[in-house]
Length: 307
Image 1 (cartoon, rainbow, N blue to C red):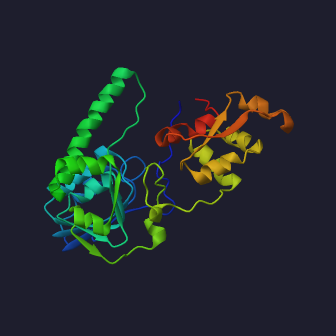
Image 2: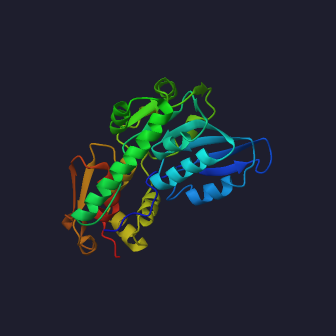
Image 3: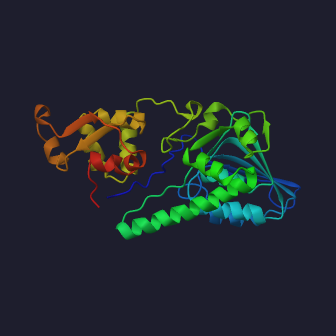
């Protein structure tokens, strides 16, 4: 199966990773307004840039949905080992591995309308039973190291940390302070549009405040999305030429449950050449779908890729 090369978080605004006031100034600000690793901020770039900073205090401003656990762990360790004082400011969101990153700071502040989310790590693997068991064992180890990081900051009991991670817990600023995951709250600095830059539908319990409004995309936008998913221009145009408005609905609705399950036979293109009244290749049925699996198979089930 072809796996999409598109970011799972699909940022809807200009992404931001930048450093202000490099050099020997007393204070430097680092902006992590992007996902971690993959399609966003790599550990390699962050560590390289961080090593150039000689300021006494570094302000780490964060608005991130998370991303690669190993890139995030590397960034966390770089922050912990740096000689400067780190003050983390959660301006909008510190979710998943981004919540681990801010734990490396000496002080964690949250905007009054910001959120922090912790959860069990998850992964995607294709292989035999032995390979999947090995991946599960690795996830157990990753979970334990992440839980210890949260424990060291919050002082909560390990069982409570496990409970919060297993439940995919979204903290408001006050809840994070009360639980020991943050130290203080400041007045909001970002507009709501800036807080909800990311498509968070890969997570199960996103607060209503962070859910994006969904509008029907244009045919051109759908074509671009299909091509970003790895399909040719011809395949994307073929799907749209069939007049299947369910494609637009699926994109607009993303993967909220209950999900519309789209099943398309593998001989789509030949059948699309038949008169409209003879086309019976698309079947739409209401059926709950697994969120992560849906990310992987969305485009492939609409039209098979050629590679």
